[in-house]
Image 1 (cartoon, rainbow, N blue to C red):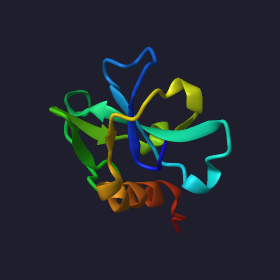
Image 2 (image 1 turned 180 degrees about the horizontal axis):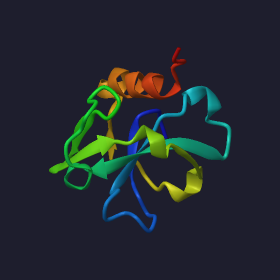
Image 3 (image 1 turned 90 degrees about the horizontal axis):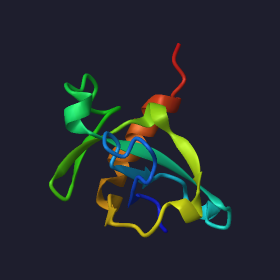
Image 4 (image 1 turned 90 degrees about the vertical axis):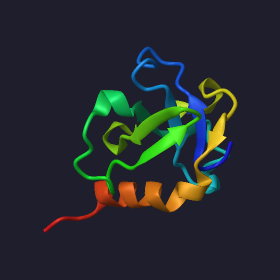
Length: 105
């Protein structure tokens, strides 16, 4: 699996969070876990106040919003096969994570 691969969410919140995206660098592929960020249905999120922090994507026909505050590490074997790639939007995803981790005065 590669950075920015999208996987179906097999967890209990899959109705509102149908997908997760791997954000972990490929330099850590030897580890058993992957750092992922939920992709929440846009209809659940509603109006996005900060599109840099919560960019919107379309997976198939489903509009989803990146939710960096829910970042989590999961066992790699629970992810299943990737169904989509957001590699072309990698800069937007990294920008959202930069917003999350940036130092503020």
